[in-house]
Image 1 (cartoon, rainbow, N blue to C red):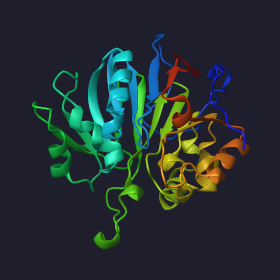
Image 2 (spheres, one colour):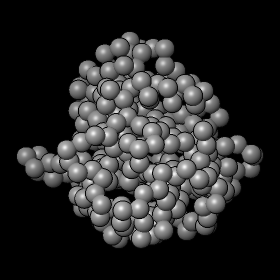
Image 3 (cartoon, helix red, strand yellow):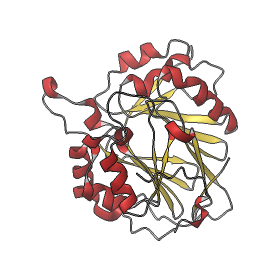
Image 4 (cartoon, one colour):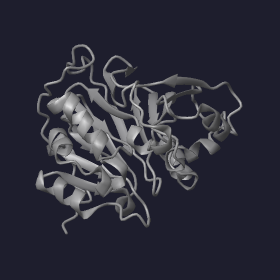
Length: 286
């Protein structure tokens, strides 16, 4: 099986114009200001951070065991002020790091989450954070901003869609985001399954086309969806995973990505990934 660790720069990646119906008018940044996006090696979990002009958005915090690497990346990124920590869903491999967040971290205290996450449990996990906490519920088509040039749009889940409580699957309703900086884009897909992939595809079609793709659910076979992956059509994909007994990542998912001539990176092999966008294309850094 061919594997690519993304050792070469991704400055060669094409930056095709995106046909998007999205947040206002997407244009190239007026000033030369870079957006730093990192996929952090938190083991068998997930965490990402986006930094623009000393402000940041964090998507998930990984397991407790991955917090030291999260902190290392945060400091390496300049210890930016965190506008919001977004928790895609309540599983520990996405929220465990909250247990170590202290007032020394430059964070507003705002947590973004879906409508199905128990805020009492999340508050309890913030045991070292002694400042106020504010919750913001996020759903499909909500938007966030980091400065004037970084647009973040939630693609999933819709606010009114939830299965019977007895059969509810938290992974299925994980928050999914498209991040746009000028003509550069990234898709953060958390732990969604093939059902959610199909629903996103049916709603947005090729609007979800993104240069950079954080592959859903650690590359799980249960997140395999040809229509969804083909619509994203990434130049570069990162699979975040660690030692596990689930069979992550699936060879079928990896083969699909390779068939699209996509470069694929694995945090378990290389560690954390760091990308810069100048508004026109991504390049790998550090």
